[in-house]
Length: 542
Ligand code: FAD
Ligand code: NAP
Image 1 (cartoon, rainbow, N blue to C red):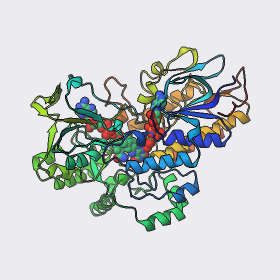
Image 2: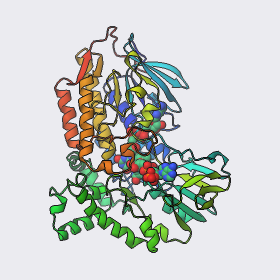
Image 3: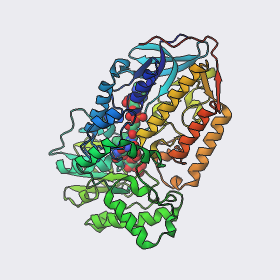
Image 4: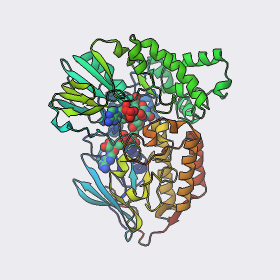
């Protein structure tokens, strides 16, 4: 097939931008589509007040270009959304990426054309394009979910979802505001909304563990030192199983004497950040270990909240520490000490519907002017399954994944030749610092495409056996951990009717990277590589 492009990439976030940069540099013709009006993905859409990264800016950044590392000056320890979006726009300009990106364009469907042995991609607007390869860089947390509450369309005020925040921002002053949801997005935005609004109602279904971010301006000396020796930080990240610049204590959590345990916990608590889930290597394997950490975090939450009844409502009781994504906050629990903030416990008084004046619970109507939905995403599979994708013999991705995602390495799916996922289910993905995971996947895919051309093999497809073994292994690893004890989006439990199962690869990024490298070195074990019947050469540049 002589396709319009060698590669079509769906999504222009961290993954899509790097895929374009890397593949174009190798001489492939690439076209990127994003339904957004700008590049940035997550950081384009999530403009809610308080949105910032929970992995430190210096680590949550690309490593592929040392000049970029040296010239970009992060200003805060955890950069806020506008700064990360500015960084991604800078990347798009600096590497002249925009000429191959079409914004405000949705990929409406994709079908593998057996005869032509490539992908036929329908775009809206734009019509049909063809490509030898299709890369889904559609994001693990990009399919935002608003619950279908009865009467929602009758609400007389304004409604927002944190992941579809208006560009011009929202003025909460003088407003009565309800925030539904207390995951990372709710926990980041609630203190800021509360400081502005006349009254804030926080509607909580499940309390969450959150630790202080200790965000601060980035010390210019630290920035300079890192820029001068970025390789050292990147190496530390590469060696860590979560791609976080942190070192585990190798001992079993329960074997550590109390004074030492407490000292490390205090150090991590005072240092801030996600490192509290990475103190001991068995922390997510042993319930006792998780509870040992969780008990102290609960004490710390209690100490922040003046009203003991409110404090107890804010304490997680139904799952162990770490089994839902840990949140980072700046003054979240302290917000409940304000007179103009009310915690509504939806476990005691569930929502029954929405009326023009507000939200109805079993305890009556909460009258509000604004409802903020911080209700999360159909994670990991939502943005993929939202696109009708048809592979060989009319097989659809929806049918293939009806019982849960099946992948080989989280990168490929049998029956869908020449299709790649970036940070797909079955890879470490959302358990890790995502930018290095994205770079690792894109690099692997790029090397694979070069190999195919060099070997004069234009088709690659995961074998049924390899993807079955891999998917079984991903499930078995998940079941060895305590993650299944959390009612989390990792497990698909936040979406009604979604098949349950732990979706990411729980064996860590280092092992995972070794497996991927080994598969490539072996000549792509577990994949069928074939010569297309109608082999065309590389497509002309766009
Ligand atoms: P995304 O950035 O989600 O980009 C996907 C893009 O694909 C979107 O722009 C979307 O519009 C587009 N798209 C999807 N389907 C289609 C279609 N059919 N047609 C056209 N376009 C389509 N991870 C971390 O490691 N550290 C953090 O601190 C962190 N903070 C986060 C904060 C928030 C608020 C959220 C929601 C997530 C956060 N994450 C974090 C995860 C974050 O999603 C990743 O780090 C990273 O930004 C993902 O990049 P991506 O390119 O893979 O996907
Ligand atoms: P989330 O973690 O899934 O939280 C959604 C919240 O909405 C939960 O509290 C959930 O309650 C609640 N909810 C959902 N449906 C509801 C309903 N019908 N009624 C009442 N409550 C409902 O989503 P998120 O906060 O957007 O975060 C998703 C992920 O994105 C995070 O885990 C993280 O990986 C990433 N993120 C990171 C940051 C950061 O700090 N950098 C910020 C935001 C997001 P239940 O728990 O009871 O389901």
